[in-house]
Length: 149
Image (cartoon, rainbow, N blue to C red):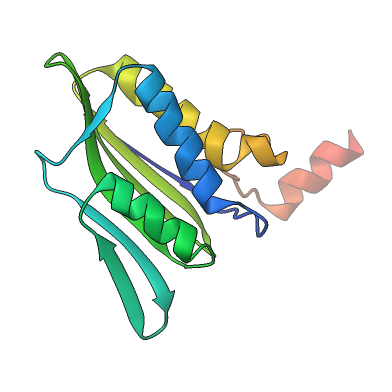
């Protein structure tokens, strides 16, 4: 299964390194280790003319520490806890928002990882992310009639 979510907010004061470290600490605390068995990319754009790619999770965190203002930052990496619990995660942090995509065979894993992504990247900064139905446009005549009643 694959669950992709877009958040069109980006807190300009986000400590990206701290957010990724908190996310990784959560994963390690739950027995997950990084794995590149599905292939991986760990990229950050340092300037419009320079993009860096890390070859390991540790190297990725080192690059984030060295270049904390890089945008966009994206990683596509797998994590596993034994053979039974595994997932692949894509996170892109850009000035226009946050995109997260989690793939796993376990629906509970999908949900818990997305919840942790929101916690590390959005809620801890005071944003309370709500998910619901999008805006539905209605004709003006219907709106006016509703307000008159």
